[in-house]
Length: 141
Image (cartoon, rainbow, N blue to C red; front, side, top):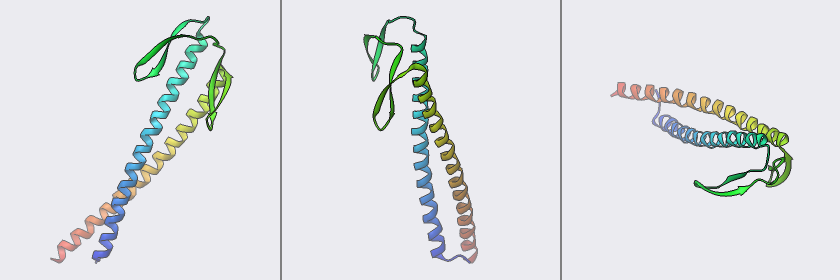
């Protein structure tokens, strides 16, 4: 027989796990957005690599606003290498940095998915236990 206190504890745990699951889902969305950003950046750097001469281009400022500009040096790009430190890198080196970041995000996503699966499994397990306890309580009445 399950006590009211035990049932209450399981219910609180169930709710905490659901909140944790929501937090994990939000983190996954952020990581997926970061992954897509890295994919777009990689494509843009690849496109720059294909430029044969300096051209006029549109430079995005954000929110669908662009300015006309010229690319003066198509051999090197500034790359954030961490902690806000920017370095000049050639195109191939910058692509390697982007790929490293992409692989790191991918690993984080896989790890997060594993944690999501564990939490979902615990939620299902506790949910089943709570149902059984409630059925048992109804049987007493």
